[in-house]
Image (cartoon, rainbow, N blue to C red):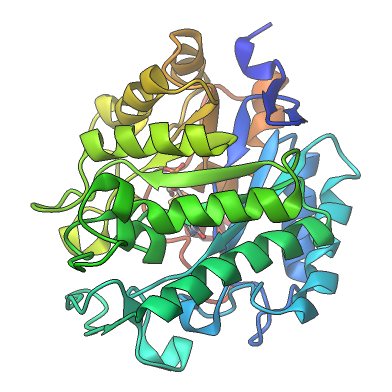
Length: 362
Ligand SMILES: Cc1cc2nc3c(=O)[nH]c(=O)nc-3n(C[C@H](O)[C@H](O)[C@H](O)COP(=O)(O)O)c2cc1C
Ligand code: SF4
């Protein structure tokens, strides 16, 4: 049997196979951020499709951190009851499900978050066209507290774990990056200082939820920006996270303003299948916790080689599971050897993610 269909522990939780649905915002919550029947049905399908670990789309921990329309909220206790419908649906199957908790930082717009977007430092974002406001020291403490409260809500809702969003130029990622973090206080400068928000959230979430409750991270491994976060920085941050108790590291990268984000369109060559996997492999050599390989992975053969060669322990997929939520089951049954996703990125549909290529055919 392929190693891809063998179980793997993430902290105290056993994932039944090596396939992960990487966090994917689905534009299916209601306008207030409440979970809807469409959300629940999407997660139920992914679980029926035998995805080992499903990571939800980003849920915002503060109102100022809302990035997208119809995004799930987790910034208040009132969301717990609705969120609980997701693990309840997933747990009818063998899959596990983690809640991704996030703050968009300067990668939002006042019309979405209802305020002037915030950032470690006032560095203009040419993509969102936002000049953010610098967070005051007491606001950073409140941010850490709100991430921890969100993790607790995730646990109360019945999720098997949470994932901290520390990638793609979102707020925690922008603390890690010297490009966006130009402060002169204890939250900036050295790698340790830039990682302080992330580490305090991790330690606080572990203390509040219990050591057994898995907390993983989606980590930028490069910003692709001159003066931004480098892979060497990310390797050191991974080590600090391991010491502080992280249960797994999903390795991503990119930042919209670099012109190179995390969701690469139209893979230009076979070499780009698994475009962040070499960075994952570098991080895996530095830590002992499970590492997730990500980025344009499309075929069973490449996924198998990544795990067999020890470059990553789990395989994360986003767009292939929009194309076909049953892809993992089809892999296992020998009905598919690869995804039909062509990475055209037309699935970012504000009325709800769906594969535009499939819709075209009907
Ligand atoms: C529609 C869509 C929504 C996404 N939403 C999120 C998100 O909420 N959080 C996140 O960390 N990444 C998000 N991503 C990025 C994916 O998790 C993944 O990192 C990226 O698409 C590369 O994987 P893939 O080539 O398998 O799609 C999203 C991607 C897509 C296509
Ligand atoms: S629209 Fe379909 S083919 Fe295009 S990236 Fe999205 S899932 Fe893949």
